[in-house]
Image (tube, rainbow, N blue to C red):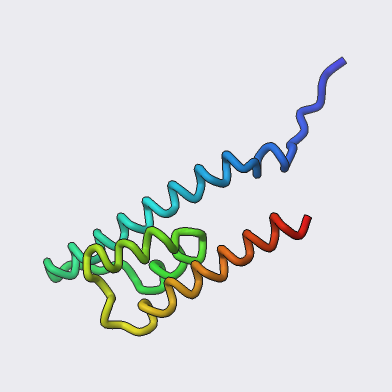
Length: 102
């Protein structure tokens, strides 16, 4: 008999895999903040602000926020100063709620 290959979502969304994903997306968020600042200094094509927010919303809020302050990039824009931490806090609250509501 042939065994059926089934996808187990609990294995895919294991704590280890989620932590690896969050590490990668936050490193990427930090990197794109550096890259955008670098491009701003050179007067080159910039990363759209929408993209920075999307990366933050996909779990990269810590990386983008740390990058914002480490490179002093977008710190004069209230949308970023409030938006990045707000999105990150909402995500953390959602994660805590998810794990403690089981």
